[in-house]
Image (cartoon, rainbow, N blue to C red; front, side, top):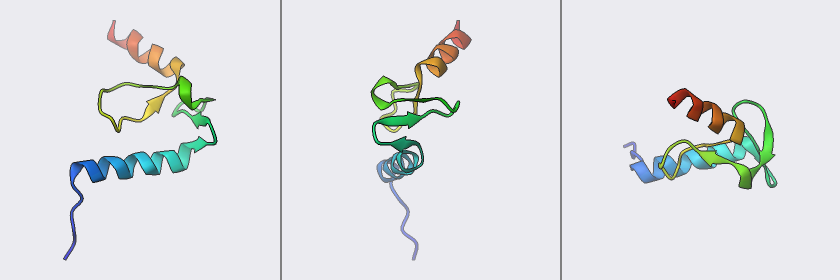
Length: 66
């Protein structure tokens, strides 16, 4: 029988996979390709498992809302 992950387990698994792919030391490779310090990243959603983005992508997203 296959065990289904609950929403928290799915979110944690997504975050761990993303970190394994995009985090190297204290640096994060954003979806746009920029490498930035992980501490300078932001999320576009209040979801605790929302993937981080760099400041440039954050500004672009906010400009799209205006």
